[in-house]
Image (cartoon, rainbow, N blue to C red):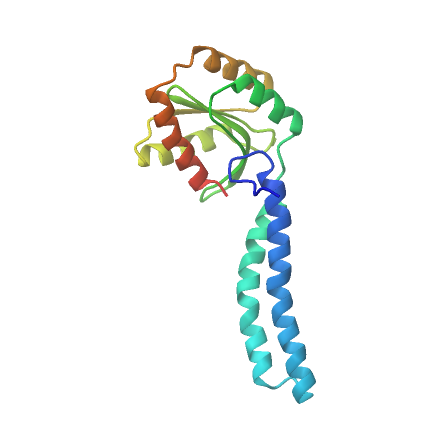
Length: 189
């Protein structure tokens, strides 16, 4: 089975499964160590108990990432298909979750065009102005000049994507978009 990379459709779903499995394994190991010590010494006060307690730390740390992924909503397949068709050759990212100091925002789809990044979020709690400002600051901090616009209405988003795809010129913009894509992938959860 091919690993789904960050920014590809289905990333959140695959991470939910992968992180849940790894967390289970990382927490199962200390439990097994504890019961081995209990079977050998017939009491809890032994070195195996200490090792088991310390062994829980990596599993608990990984559990935090698992919980973050379990709380995220996956992109609707219809949104993915429509966006993929509308974007054409433009680079697009899906299932992106951006964290900032104040809040976490999920963006179903991001499309990068000539000098701009536009996105769609189906989450009713999304504050478009906040995430636009956050992404603009991050991109500018990495020497990528882009305007960012996040839509909550899919029809407006799709119309803008089609306009960008129709007027897009290749060449130098492709290289610039690659850098912007790399920055956006790096800051996504």
